[in-house]
Amino acid sequence: MERSCLVVGSSSQIGTWLVPDLVAYGWTAHLISRGIARRADDGPRAIWHEFDLARLDRPFPSVTADVLFHTAGIGAILPWLERIRSAGVSRVIAFSSTSLLTKANSDSAYDREMIARLAGYEQTFIATSERLGLNWTILRPTMIYGGKFGDRTVMDIARVIRKLGFFPLLGQAKGLRQPVHAADLANACMQTVDCTAAFNRTYNLAGAERLSYRHMVERIFKAMDKTPRFLPVPLTAFELAVRLANLHPRYRHLTSSMATRMNQDMIFSIEEAVADFGFTPRAFLPRL
Image (cartoon, rainbow, N blue to C red):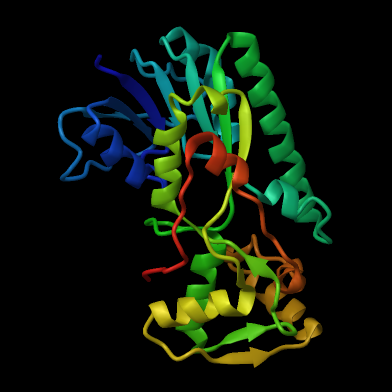
């Protein structure tokens, strides 16, 4: 039976891996994106629709589909769920973030406000999906790498290394991390779509390895063909550097709490995902 789907965030780090998988398995994929970014391997089953979810004054593209894969921010899809339901969609897989759990008690007001919004988005997504009779799944990844855009943390570390030639660390930077590859998250979409055990469930998705923050940065150095070099930095100096970085729009998301989190574990069990749909992430081997 021919299947069709909507993919919102088709050009995201997850979307760039998911779309080829869908096409390879014979899906007709309607790709919703603010900008059309056709790729050589899309094929005729990948149909692009230029549409900005923030433009509530515009009609949603006229399509028919069975499944929605939402790989962009979960809040953006909320105003459109009813319209998507009317397009025939009965199954929705959306991405949130484990930041909801790791930053809930952050010292940063920016972090707490962001997490409060994210929690509200998840609650609204679930309530709306259930009201509309949609079978939903929320996937919460840890630090994403392996895509065109990548997780901010991984990419920011790489930028610092390129700019300074070393990386500043607070203390031993022993907090554990589990970076997860974007291709493994795309695979999780394919694994959960027809898995009834995953219906109406939320899963934390992490990589196969638990690495200290320092070890993770060492891997990034090596992926860049650079010798790992670290500079111990006191918290006051790190806070000053963050304030200076915040003056640039690209780095306004940085907070001094990032330094203290270097020594905090941010790890999650993936046992439920393994048991329910066979999630099999890879080790952290970035290519930058």
